[in-house]
Length: 108
Image (cartoon, rainbow, N blue to C red; front, side, top):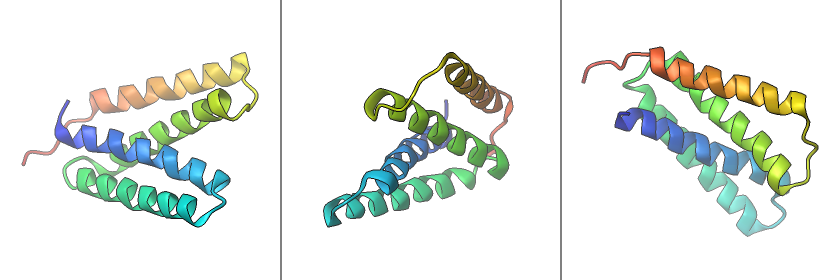
């Protein structure tokens, strides 16, 4: 895995953080962390997007954020989990991995 895909993973992880922050932030410190996570997330997405196809990079970024946010909600915030929800998240994760595997990187 190249450094560019690693940047997408980092961007996706920070996306999970800022999405959770948008819902749960209730102090200046929380909002500051949320804004920092937004900036870091999009910085890494933009940097990776310079070498990876933009559509695929964005789809993987959003997919990581979606899967992580849904799983975080179920694991840490008491959101309902169901077989259907887990199956759909698994399908999404399969698509994300598939996109990464079939997408060539641009040469430097």
